Amino acid sequence: MSVNDAKHAKRESRVERPPRALRGLATALLLAASASAGCSVSALEGAGYVGPTNACSDACAAGASCVDGACVAAKTSYPFFLEITPPTTAHFAPNTTFAHCIGEQSGGERNLDLPAPAIVFARIEATAVTCTNGKPLGASLRLVRAGAIPGAAPGTFEVQGAPTETTPDGVSLSVPPGTYDVYVAPTDDCAIEQIPPYPLGTRTFGSGAQKLVVSYQTSLPQFAVNLVDETATPLVALGASDPTEARELSLVAKSTGNVVSTVARTCGHESTATLTLAPAVARDPNDPLTHDYTLRIAPSKAACGTVTPARVQPSYDVEFAGLSVDGGSSGTVAVQRASKVTTVSAFGDVRAIVSSTPVAASVVLRSTALVMPNGAKFGTPFFVVNTEADSTSGKYFVEAPAGTYHAVAVPDVASAYAVWAAELTLARNQSIATITVPPKAPVQGLVIAPGGASFKIGTIDALAMLDTSAGALPNRSQSSPFALAKDAGAADYTRNFSLSLDRGSYDFVARVPEASGYPWLLLPLVDVPQPTTSNPHLALGSLTVASPVRLSGVVRDPNGDPVSHATVRARAVLLGTGAKSDPSTCSYTNARAVAIAETQTDESGAYSLVVPADFAGVPRSTTP
Picture 1 (cartoon, rainbow, N blue to C red):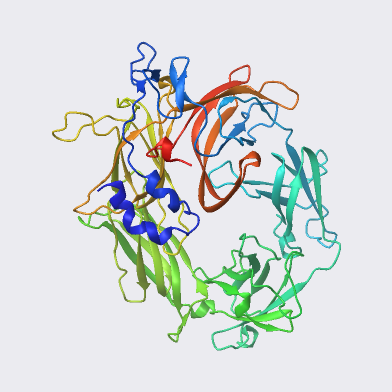
Picture 2 (tube, rainbow, N blue to C red):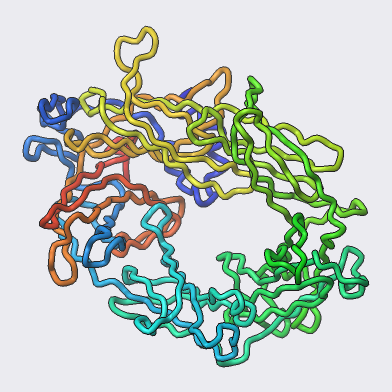
């Protein structure tokens, strides 16, 4: 199976679908590279490396010239930026990653002067909270870097704690200066029942100390939830209270997943729970709650009095648009009583699709529809089961409400089997269908130098691309060292890497030795299909490393002192269809970032690295 064959069937249907919006570039990017003339190949002996090295011959490839005896390009055909992370032992900003923007895509000397980090403090003040016996309230501070590029340095920073005598301003985070979405929440169990988390929206932090004080001195809006059973009867009217009925209710922002209300707990047949809402929750007399929020009702983890809550009880996610809202401050939700849940206890199994061999796997079942005692199905309740299938029998145990479930089996990443899904029905006196998992897809390729010589040493990384579309299966990243091999009857080497992968899309990065003088190779957006009898593996063919673009300089802290042993990483920015970019400020939308080089500074803070002039399979003359 060729790369073109593998991608053809799915390519057109996913051109505009984020986050895989780079499909417009894919046809050119996924062509197997042919050897290009320009650099001769010799062997570096006696230095721990034997293989192709970058050395000038009669002419270098287009866009490159001979510099100090090696073929070197002046600039890349794509935007990129650098990340600098001082080590954990550094006196300045330990383990904090800074981005250095490069507007003109060119190499050369680049001294990296790091700014002083922003030190963000957060403290909660709420005189109404009395359950902490006078102790300062604990707080969780979460900062999400606005506009962070997927694949770049982590965009989320979080810390928890409470003010002390030595830290009266509360918890703190050291982050690069920039713009962040800020979320502060109480961490004490009793406090979260009295005051809600506080989304502070977008804030820009410069270097130095930035203090946030979240004060709950004023009254906040509230929303009452009335609970009824499947017959619309208020729970309180059902007679003797059932202590196994214990629930937790909260409001969740759909866009972020953050809780934006207090957590209300009900016990027995209590019919009403009141939520105090964060100030950021929009309210309007004609539309009391916008449709950006979901009411979540979950089984309580805490005991209801002296009785343990029911073990099998569904959760509910209720769109506010679907609530029966009364007067703008209350709504009604139907729930299934724990005593009425039809519980199924049964074994399922996971087996190989061809041989029926038992397969060890993690199994996650998420309900698609639960069954009420009278046979009516509800689309709102849900139940999630996490279980394990053992390697001896492939069996797993399930205890869950009756209904239909979407099940995903995830074999160990080192196994020969791929992630797979099945639709299962759980019903009393009915066996659970077997989940049959297919083999992984073998992917092979040969990384070569421009003169045609194969690399004997190196590492191939298959970096999984996340697919968030409905029903998509997760795929997992994998790495493997190079190992030269020949096909039967072949005179020359036909591959130096071979991986077995889950079905899905990947960026392939080949990390060749620094001693070769060549950069890493990037082959983005490869669709790996499920293998078939007629196409048992995916052949990427020969992939030629590009000419290097050299960068060097010194990393310094705000005092001008060198930062030794810092990690310096280069990331290519892959722009999707309709992407907007400003490389001078590292501002990108509809884009991804992939690591293409990495090194460490020496004792004097100096660094040197090379990045590829082009992606694999894209001739220099055709790149934008």
